[in-house]
Image (cartoon, rainbow, N blue to C red; front, side, top):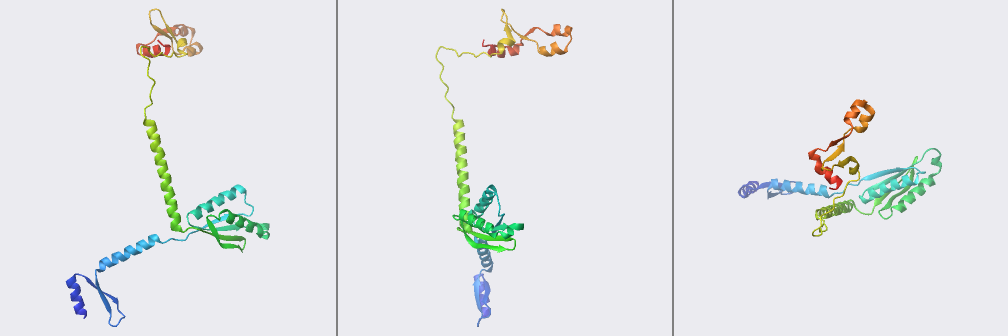
Length: 248
C-alpha cells in the first residue's frame, strides 16, 4: 500500500503526508505540503494580529493628594480606560499615614465613582504593607477601544482637512473692488511727513535736506557743518516716489 500511495502522489504531483502515524493502519494524505505550511503560517499570523494583550497600567497616589494633582491623575486613568487597558491604583502611605487607612479607602472609592462610566472595580481595595491597591477594568474590550480611537483620529483628520480646504478656497476668491466713477481720477494721498522733508521750487525741482544733519551738527566741525548742511536736489530715480509722497 505504501508503494501504491507514493505512486499516486507522483502521478498527481503532490506530497504524501502521514497524518496519524499511531493509527492502525497509519493514515496518510495526498496534499501540497508547501501550500499547507504557508496557509498554516498565514492563519497563525492572523490569530496573533487579532489577539488582545492585556496591559495593566499603574497609577500611584498619596492619601493627602492636592485637588489639581488628583484631576491630573484621574485624567491619566480615564485615558488608559478609553484605550481598553486595566489600571492598578496604588495609594502610598508614609509615617503616621499608615494608621489612617480610611483616607486611602475613601480616595479609591471617589476615583472609582468618578470613572464609573468607563470602568468598573475589578479588584476591591486591599491593604498591602504600606500601600493600598485597587484594580479598575474597562467596560470595553481592547479591540473595540482601538477601533474607536482609530475612528476618532480619522474623524479629527477629516475635520482638519475640511477646515484647511475651506481656508484655501476663502483666500483664493478674488475680492471685488469698487468700480471707479467715470471721469474722476483717484486722489493721491499725501504723506504727512513728506511736506517737512521735501520742498518744491518754482521750476518744479524737488529739494531735500542733506543726510546726517543731526550727526553733522553734533559731531563735525563748524566748517564741515556749514558745507554739509542745507538742501540738495532729489535724485531723478527718487523723484516719482517723492511726488507720490507729496500727492503730486
